[in-house]
Every structure is written in structure tokens, then in C-alpha cells.
Length: 417
Image 1 (tube, rainbow, N blue to C red):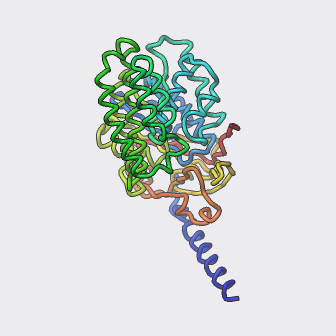
Image 2: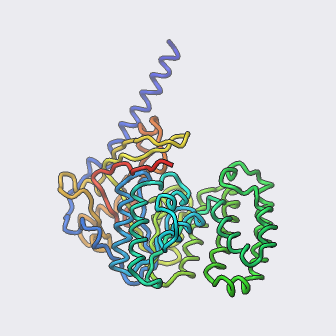
Image 3: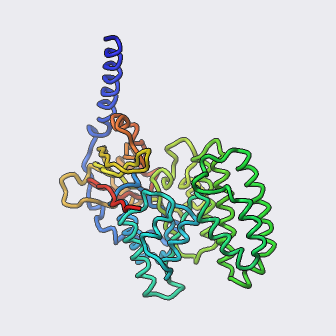
């Protein structure tokens, strides 16, 4: 009986906390002038001095957020001449997507499976990749779209691209170091010990020096881009080792993703870069106690970085279980931003803060704290009871330059492997 009382007391506390945290921002709701918003995502454009547009998503496993990244990218292609799509996915794996959309063999399903995360193996991503391939069939090579990744959490595809280049010009060098890096695999990446990772870092530094020494040979044979991407794959392998060793995994990872964007700015075609990832990476202010990618970009580029966040009142998303399978989880969260279109015909709206901030009501909303939804890959049943487990508090104008807000969103269409 005593045990039952303890369990009942603990459950009562959890329920009370859930009820307490579930009331945030509802009583303070004020109606704003909706003429400052637009429902046509295709009309989105950014100022001419913007170099990087970041689009965040409140959850990875949502159909509308996958579709939104396609819609915003298409708008930037049409309205701002953007040609580069960069996802929060594996650098080496995304190169296979880029090869596919530029006439490579295989299928879109096979290509998106290489991005590095099961949450991207969706029909929505396949549709985007197929659209990019179709687009490229109608334009010149100089106008072609590109699909890249900025993440540094995988080994296999980076090794594959790297050694496919080296073995064409310096097979002995390739054979030597493919053996040295044999233990660095995606399957083993989280179980490698500190000694192995540190030894790999030393070998990678040595290898990159040798790679630089034969740059001229590789460029003469295969072209400058082949060398540049091969070298960056080697640096990605190094970064993956470093992330695994780091005492602050998230901060180290975001720092390396920032360096990837810097690299793309230096090696791109001078058009706007479009980057996509979780809200927590894309926002200009950190919400998790470490310096995030968006904050680094904002500090370095100033107005050259334009950040768009997302939120929804009601979220159904694919939550990944420990066994890798997915289940649909639902949460709800109301605030002064996502309440604006309650009862309206439109299911979504975009608001540009620079325009809306001049309105008194919008200025009040965007300058005050708002609790927005934040879901990553999974959410347990117990976590659903605590709003703090799936929301984060931000000041909108300090975190984003605009937001796309939905009334409700539904799970993405996961493809079978």
C-alpha cells in the first residue's frame, strides 16, 4: 500500500506539472492585424544583401515541414536566384543526392536514403529531389541546382567519395589510408574508443597534408571541384572523430556545421545558400545552452543571414523508437503566434518580422516571450505529459527574421527500407 501511495503521489505531481505548464500563453492572447501575414509561401523573397537563408523546422518527422522546405526553396530559386540547397544531413551522403539530381543513375529513393537519417527517407523528400532533377534537365550547367549536406556525423559516404577520387590518380596513397581508416565506419562510430579516435585524427591530419601535396595532379586530371570536395570529405571524417570525442557534442557539431556553410560560401557560385535544419540550429539565439549554427552565422554575416522558424498549434509527427521504427505522437501548444489563424481558412501563414514589427500589436507579440513547439526525433509517453519536454521559450524577433506558422501538421510519409 505504501508503494502504491508513492506511485500515486508521483503521478499526481507529474499531472499537476503538465496542467501547470500547459496553460502558457493562452490567457494573454491578442488578435493582430493579419494583413501583415501572407499564406502564399511562393511569394517569399529576401533582401538583396542576404547570403544565407536558414529555414528551421519544429520537428523533423512532419509532412508539412518537408513540403515547406521544398516550397521555400522553390520560392528562393524563382525570386532570389538561389541554386544551392543544404540540409542538416551527411556531407558525403548528400553528394550522392547532388549527383542524382545532376543526371546520375539510380532513383530518388536510393539517393535520399544516403542523407544519413531515417527521418529523411520520406516521400516528401523524394518529391523534392525528383523536382530538382527535373528542373536541372531544363537549364544549363551553370544554372543547375545543387543539393548538399552540412552535418558531420557519418564516415562511410565521405570515405567512399574521398577514395574514389584519390584512387584515380594516386592508388597507392588511397590503398594505404583506406586501410588506416578501416575502423571508421557508420556502424561503429558511436562505439569507437578514445585511443582509436585520437589516432585516426592524427592520421587524418597527416593524410590531408599529403593530399594537399598532390593537389596539382588531381586538379589536372579530375578538376578543381573533385579535389575540393575530396579534401572536404577528409575534413568531415576528422570532424566526425572530433564530435565523438567532444565533451559538448552539440556545440562541437554546430561549430563544424557552421564551418561547412563557410566552406560553401567560399566554393559556391555566389548565389544565395538555402540551409535547412531543426529550429534549434537555425535560430539566431541559442535555446539549449550552447552556441548554435544560426548564432554563429548571425554573428559573422550580420544582415547577410536571414532566419525563418516554424511552429504549429497541433503537431502529429513520426517519433523514432529505440528499435529504429516510428510511431505517431501528438502534442498541442498555443501561443500568440500560432493562435492568430485559429478559425481562419488558411492552414499556414508567413510573417516577415521586419515588416510586422512596426505594427503595435505585432511589435508586442514579437518582442515578448513565446513558447513554441520543439520536437527532435523522438518523444516518449511520459515526456508528453511535461510541456517543457516539447516546447522552448523564445523571443521571436531575437531568434528569427520571420516565421511560418501552421494550425496543425501531420506525420511525414516514411518509406520502407
